[in-house]
Length: 276
Image 1 (tube, rainbow, N blue to C red):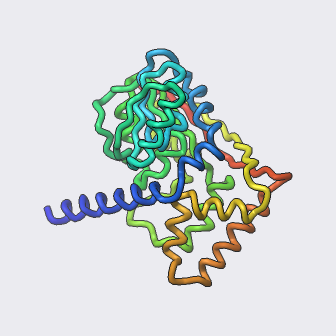
Image 2: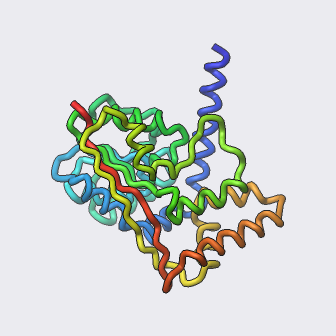
């Protein structure tokens, strides 16, 4: 019993750490300034229409949830970080979208089996540390014949490279945690979902980001706005030499990817049907 209690406590601490990380900086600015096109792309791929019961996992401030509601879906936007949901509520109200916002852990969703016609996640569930647990949950709450839609950064793409670059500067991950960009590999997602889905369609696409004219502009924006990057720099607070090395590495990464003021960020868009 002690081992089980210790495991639960460790999981609670890990989730609290994740909740705090995503509240750092200004992720809604990332969502609106850089990746706003991703939500509508996922909603379109899932063919969400009037009356569809939709769950968005790792919804953040509503990048996909709000477009799904505007398309006629009966939407629940769930996320581990309440600060992001609060921003989403205000944005939804401003855009005339009606939906429900609920704090929830992607690895322990508070919904009944088969509750939703569509279960989706736009660069959200990929950050749950235990991939199989998260995949089991998103399949569980989708009804038989329903749609599962996932949009995730690929390991080989720009954001995947950024996470690989930051890894040596970050604290070691807890036991059992897996790298988020693995969700950007079709074979990994197929293995997670297994024979519980059919009709898998997967496409690699690229998001054009034209918000940064110089590599240093990209770096400074991510240092102040993006929770995972902020958390890594906080880990280096007492090591200015390593922080300077990370500064240089991030600028080099962006400099190598910038082409005429544009960086292309590759992602995997995967849809499937829950087996009957």
